[in-house]
Amino acid sequence: MILAMPTVVSFADKPTLVGKRVRLRPVREDDATVVAALDPETLRLTGTHRIPDLEALRRWYGGLAVHDDRLDLAIVEQGSDTYVGEVVLNELDADNLSCGFRILLAGPRHFGRGLGTEAARLMLAHAFESVGLHRVELEVYGFNPRARHVYEKVGFVTEGAKRQALRWDGAWVDAYMMAILADEWAEHHGYP
Image (spheres, rainbow, N blue to C red):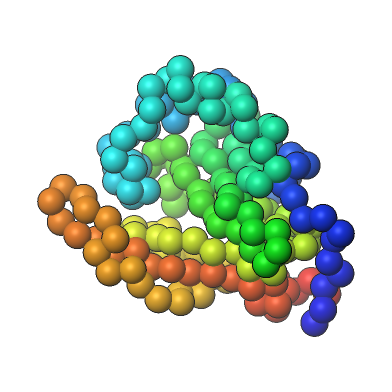
């Protein structure tokens, strides 16, 4: 299958994507408040040793709208409008039609409800079907099998491992490299 390629690949457009359980909207400066207060388990699962102070986070989130090499969208629960996390396409390589992917759910109360799965599907649909990317890749740590399961469920394939890539509480943790290609997305999700 050959997809029509856009003339310029960019994340300058910051769309709002709507699903059944979640709405993805561009991040805002005030989203930094939730990120600054992330619990230790969420930080561990993402391999985040430290987060910047609230003012630095506010400046970062407030300036993301001008970046055309990344797309940071807040995950907001439908109905309650509660910020539950974020999903990001980053490190855009326009020449090779590829980018990185990451997702964060802001605490265990949001786990196991399908919010991350739907957010990942919405963002990947945008990456492949609207932006015209060929490859989206990520890394997931060995101590986060729940995330790895979600990535596999939406179509990511494990390509290898970076042995002892993260040092956490004195122990070394492997990082698994995963990716999904446009034709795999199309086959997995049935678009032409």
